[in-house]
Image 1 (tube, rainbow, N blue to C red):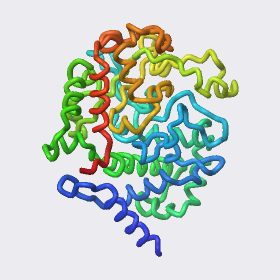
Image 2 (cartoon, rainbow, N blue to C red):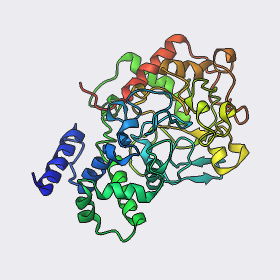
Image 3 (cartoon, helix red, strand yellow):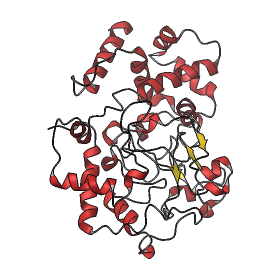
Image 4 (cartoon, one colour):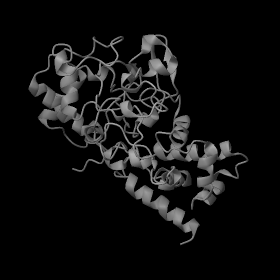
Length: 365
């Protein structure tokens, strides 16, 4: 099959897989989506080969770690970062990182600690990061891209790059187009169909939604207002918060070499406070989307909670049963207004969990 017809067939496959409701979604043929998807699943772009973006961000788990590891392993066996691999779906709509002076919080950026200010920069970082794809330099990534079967399609779509940095920007753009496409962000959960009055919720799901909006205080950060950019409900305001998550003593980052982790077992993850060197934001991490939350365990920046049930219980009773969870990893700046003593019953916790299950994509009646 020629590359031309291969690309057309590949785009057609994307269209078929991403459009689950023809009345809602209009298929758009885009070579950039096809190229970005090829890059996303390419295991030849790591050092050593074998690690793709999809290795830690798989479709079947909402584009999070398919093995549900606390911390995903890098291309080099035994290397780990300090942070959990979040689901990419819907989180990629995070705006450019900025500081909101009214609410006194940072908004947007990528990675849970906000270390990349925008999506395109975030897409480049894992390729060169030692604990992810381990290429070291952009030049090393570019040499692999030039040997890829789809390189001619990149040049056809973007033109001939004059520098390695320019070619890498093409790669980042194609990945961004794919990651913001309907294949990754399909808006096909039961909640979406319920919102359009195409289906009904069960009584338990309705009660869970009421708790989400009221007693559980979830909607204060995981907002139900449509996002300005997408016009869709993303279940996050992309702000930052320290919710008092305890250390994960099993975090493999503590045992990394001093080159990767100079602090060893004494490492404390300061979140965005460490990124921007502002102690008043220590311990704060970006509020993630709740879409696909039921299938993207483990939870929180360090993977310390393994089930959604545990997370809900933590939010509910953190401050009245502190010994059940352990002390916060970062003691300052803990949010004690919106969680910690919500006074939900066991039944209400269960109802809330049932509602959160309605946020999983590709719902079938």
